[in-house]
Image (tube, rainbow, N blue to C red):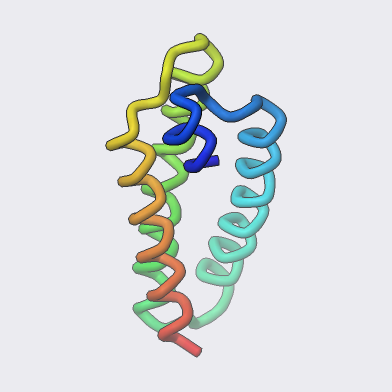
Length: 95
């Protein structure tokens, strides 16, 4: 999606953004469930916070920009990706 946004200077198709959001929401909800009902390391809790922050950015990009046919700012998009990757790295460090 980032390549579409940066390469074509247009937003990716809505269906790709929605699919990405649904898959990400499923993963975040599973991680939240485990974090709430099981004892997990502190890094996993921080990873959850990073994913929730990335999700908030994703919701803003989708509802605030994409749905209104406004171009998503590349800085917000890159920040969204970096925060999500940081969460993934933290989660992988738990293994």
